[in-house]
Amino acid sequence: MQTKFALAVTSGSAALQCAVAACGIGPGDEVILPAWTWHSCFNAIVLAGALPVFAEIDESFNIDPADMESKITPQTRLIMAVHLQGNPADMNRILEIARRRKIRVLEDCAQSVGASYKGHPVGSMGDIGIYSMQLNKTITSGEGGAVVTNDPLLFERASRYHDLGALRPLHEQIAGGAKADPFAGSQFRMSEFTGGVLVAQLRKLDRIVQSVQTSARRVYDGIRDLPGVQLRHLPDPQGELGTAVFLGFETKTQCDRYRAAMKAENVPASNPAGSAILPIAPHIEHKSTVHPAWPSFTSERGRAIQYGAACCPRTIDILSRFAGVSLDPTFTVKDTDDIVAAIRKVYPQVMRG
Ligand SMILES: Cc1ncc(COP(=O)(O)O)c(C=O)c1O
Image 1 (cartoon, rainbow, N blue to C red):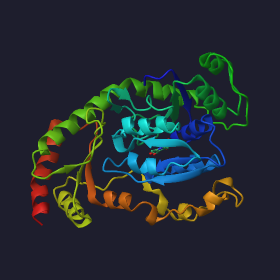
Image 2: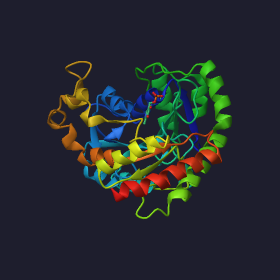
Image 3: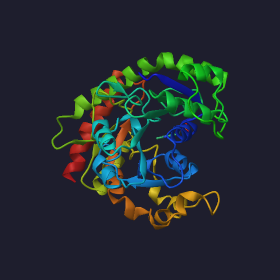
């Protein structure tokens, strides 16, 4: 992944907790995350005692850099750039804003292992990155995760957090010596059995990525000339994994018609998946925590912040207007031809109304 350090942990969620802890995030700090992502992102922030602040997504389904910038306050310490459903986020704009405002960037690559942005593997551009090797991901060890970084101090702190606050000789040697103070950490060590499966899976990564990217390109090339066709925004089309090819519509009604017609062709298309519109989850809207005195929402700012649908109308709208066909690394040319044929038949009908 072109980073100096990689730490194996038990899951992507554990990796997020280690990465947030490595960055020294805690009570009083604000962390910006996209309104459309997985629960683990929000949870890692709250479990650190910090305050999650949502930003809207754009038509890449990833965080909108302009809205993200508007959510920065003097308390913002970290931005979560999440690369969702195989599509790298707009890292040039995100990093430019974050560097200018002296805020760290965590890349969550759980859903995009193997994707890249302008030649850089996802996870290698921000201050720290995380991966998931859970069952639904590009490669899997059943469960599993990793933290990557080029910063020896962040690596040491992540290592400590994943192992009770201790630094074992191997990690100390890799970090180039112990420089951080110990603290109470958790226990997220990956087992050797999991590691064994993961090593075998890693050898297949390039082949899996190449296969799914080739299929996606065939589909894109087969539908690009459809009049007025709107595709999901790809900040770097070369680096996208291509695990699904999404079409966008003016209205939810049109999108629903497209989904129904594709189903009738036996080529199902679905709205973006694998994440949740977090601000409208009831326990998030109500700011529920494990203990009433939990520090995330007890400060003046924590009490004042409001979640719910009103904080992410654009996210809700975009997700309702896009639908995509999922691609699998085992798809053949015949499979992608079938997908192209179905889209070419259905799309003009939907657009004619
Ligand atoms: C964006 C994102 N981050 C983090 C995770 C957490 O990974 P894990 O399931 O390995 O804990 C997921 C899992 O789906 C995810 O989609």
